[in-house]
Image 1 (tube, rainbow, N blue to C red):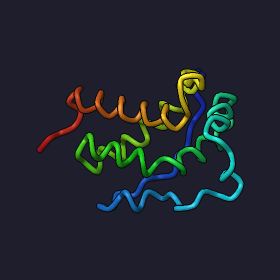
Image 2 (image 1 turned 90 degrees about the horizontal axis):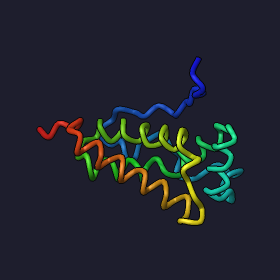
Image 3 (image 1 turned 120 degrees about the horizontal axis):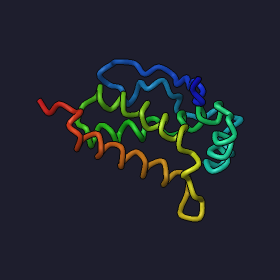
Length: 126
């Protein structure tokens, strides 16, 4: 039996204008506006999956933008968003607050994963 729990992200639409239709509200829910990202990462490490959903709502659009700029493909960028947040969920213990903010760590993960994906040739450049 796998030790990973099932993570359910909001589904991403397949519309051409995905950046504006990510299913992410422009305002974070009232209860999480003041919760720091570092606290949310600590909660994710403790198994609180709702904290991951809050981080997803905060950063999905920005991570999509990173993926779209690097991968140059909307569908790949949509898959990429899911990949990044799955990585964040599984590797939260790698975050070290003494090295920087949670926000910078999430973007470091996003850029690193985007360039790895691009370099590996998973993206078609038609």
